[in-house]
Amino acid sequence: MDEFDSGGRGSRGSDKGGEAEDEGSTPLPEKVQVGGSPAYRVGRKLGKGGFGQVYVGRRINPPIPHERIGPGAVEVALKFEHRSSKGCNYGPPYEWQVYNALGGSHGIPRVHYKGRQNDYYIMVMDILGPSLWDVWNNNSHTMSIEMVACIAIEAISILEKLHSRGYVHGDVKPENFLLGPPGTVDEKKLFLVDLGLATRWRDNSTGLHVDYDQRPDVFRGTVRYASAHAHLGRTGSRRDDLESLAYTLVFLLRGRLPWQGYQGENKGFLVCKKKMATSPESLCGFCPAPFRHFVEYVVNLKFDEEPNYAKYVALFDGIVGPNPDIRPIKTEGAQKLVYQVGQKRGRLMMDDDDEEQPKKKVRMGLPATQWISVYNARRPMKQRYHYNVADVRLSQHIDKGNEDRLFISAVASCSNLWALIMDAGTGFTNQVYELSPLFLHKEWIMEQWDKNYYISAIAGANNGSSLVVMSKGTQYLQQSYKVSESFPFKWINKKWREGFYVTAMATAGSRWAIVMSRGAGFSDQVVELDFLYPSEGIHKRWDAGYRITSTAATWDQTALVLSVPRRKPVDETQETLRTSAFPSTHVKEKWAKNLYIASVCYGRTVS
Image 1: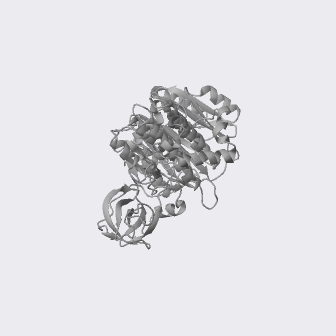
Image 2: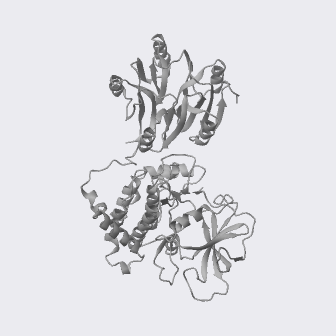
Image 3: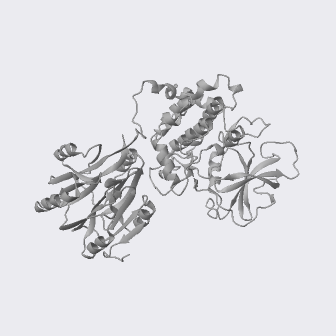
């Protein structure tokens, strides 16, 4: 990756996110007694979850030697978290707050005692039986349709109860669903464990849904089962738990998911790309229809949409048989859910979709490559466009535009041919450009920086060449740019903190070039990055006062930068178009409404 800065008027210049780390060199205690609990001897390791480790605790001198469950149980689960782990930040683990809030909720194991002993925070919990992954693994990597349908029914009810308390789990997967202890009344009961990555989807003080955001450098969950939105760093909401559950169910039924097997540093990128390109029909091949319907429902939920839990449960009713008493998994929670919803809403949630109009899908269609054009409301002005321009014709069009007192405002490339947008509303006083076989030509750019030109538009072609436009009369004070093999959000975030904002972007093949400037005239800026097209994110940002100010796309991803201007325009109207060919006919229609091209690019969208 290359990074360069202008002189300007400043100086020149896992498989799992949030996973458990080593607990330090402090040995675990041999005996545990915390928060008024009985004394326990620490036994074998049960597993690792969130930020901690889980061990068997055996009660020393129990008064009732055969008690299996509850605070007096002979055997319990002890969850240890070192005081220096990320989950603690030198205070009680965040997970404790979640258990306090959920206290005894349906399908969540009970915590009987908790406290600190030496360097460890310790929770004393009900000991449980095997995980669904254990059951699947010990049964020759198979699981019956009825068993998986029962898991679906009960898991949906557990998530509904968790969500009703304002939380999302954040790491739904087979390893985090456990059955009750064998030989007890709970051995066919399902539990959801490991709340270390749980977050609130509902604000505790206002009761409103948390705000939408996207931070492409943040991933929480497990790569195999995480929702596409989690991969892309979007704020977690109820839809993400349900999408992860859908992948869990398909894995248990089919024994494999289409994105397994990727390795290397860009594993998360490849897995997310595959998830978004895999249709529900393809994912659920050879699965009974209810599984495909469930996937279709949950991958198309909007960020703040209330899931129709009772409807999802009803999908699987026809598979499991009418008698709950002989089901391989207890489903009382689901039965209560369906009954309660039916009582409260006259079964509306169950039945109302039969006659409803098909709703617009969030994860719509299949990957495609298209032109993306962005139009802003402006006072009437002269604007001109050229497209399918070969290298040798560039100077002819630019010179003619300059003669007519037009400057280049945007550039793009498709199939190694160029598109130019020239207009009279740039405010520039002079302009230079270079067509280079390099992406980008550092020496030429630095020469122009020394002459007080700043990059105002860039484009890259599939063959690796670039068109860089630099102008005088911009408001920029200093610039920095980076060329990267992947979208460099961490670098962008760092430069934001230094007072820079993205002012131009381009791609060449799979490479990205990002230009950031001081004095850009923005008060805030965000990024929307997607393997298809971030339609929902764009509308969320528009509603919050942001407007698209830069666009770029590779064959795999689309990136849109949205900004809040320091000076609010008189007319904030902004529209976008996606078209297979350059939108020449549409542009004229937009001009008639005083809407002018502000940005254009060619690359990954959705058909």
